[in-house]
Image: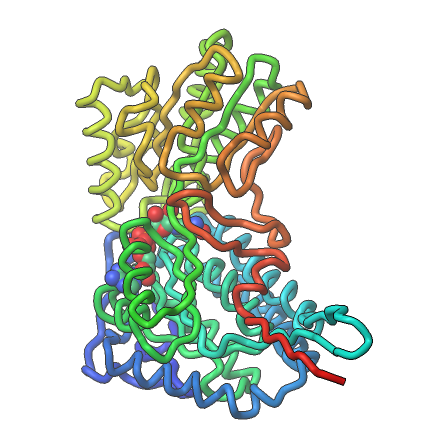
Length: 481
Ligand code: NAD
């Protein structure tokens, strides 16, 4: 990997590359080989302090004075530079996280698209005039929040960062980013792009480090003005508590346990293909993974037969070989997924495919896609997020039963409904407790669609124009004429 163009093992603060205040670094690993890939700066309280101060100063500097249309042009230039570096960014993401190259490329393109989309919005964020009669003029301003913090998970490191960073910057904020300690590299490459495009110092700051140190320092910092957290429910709870200490607003994008509901009249081949994609993409490490299959009892047998045939054909291997499914991200994640599988078996759920490492891959954190059959709705494997390629299949007999099973869970991120009956599809869509409902397809990445959770999957909405509301605050101005 000597020809890899790695970013420096430093933080990016105030437009400069700086060592961690402690002088320490940590290693990141390639999950396909279990070998070290690169070093990253080991940040803590002091580094976060520097980054937040730089972001605060940048608000009153050149960035604060830039016209919205100029901000838009800058963000568009970022999108174009990301596309120009697509191959390099995708390779780095593949090596750091394990995902297949084609998927990594798509995520990089999606990253560019976030910057392009919000570039176009930067000069269209405005208030409104409120009619209060001839003697008074009342209007609102939409002002930036100020310093925004972004705590990012490892499953789509660059793409998820862009999802919150691009709207935050489009609205005129500055940012401090804490990438996951599992995947620290591509956020630094993005910082290199910002530097190359002469972004004013302090607008984007990247501090690497572990959650309990750098992450906690950022979440509990009194001088941030908004926090976007994407990650697990338990961490989200901690982050929300820390932000509550200083009454800071949070946008929480948390976990999921999303159902695909397949009625007997559905196009079976489409439903099976979408079920496969929904659980094998990124090795099931997706908040939006379709990890619960609710199948009408009368079609269980043909559905399972088709699904098994596809599971057996899946090409698994290192992401650089551009297979269909790579490894899990880390040893810890491998242990977590294996543990969920053991608990499911101990509760009596029946494995009909997978449940173990692929025999041809003795090294790396590889696992076969796993299908549990005859799962009861209250079993562990039907209720808990696995964050791996593990499917739990439950049958139902009618619409009402399907809906009850789908909704009887603490999460509410996504749902898919497969049926030829449009009235039933829309009835289900209106009663499903999920932030996005897909009909006759499963999750798509479109950056324009509002995305976010019901219940413990979080609150607030990313993507689309609606995301911009999180990164502005409204001031009402009333004039007596
Ligand atoms: P995680 O909660 O372990 O970590 C997420 C981030 O939080 C990391 O950067 C980590 O360093 C940081 N962190 C950890 N402890 C912290 C603390 N005490 N204070 C502040 N920050 C802290 O999650 P993960 O394992 O990286 O990601 C997997 C989870 O993320 C899954 O539950 C998945 O569903 C969820 N996720 C949700 C979405 C969404 O959009 N809803 C997208 C991707 C992932």
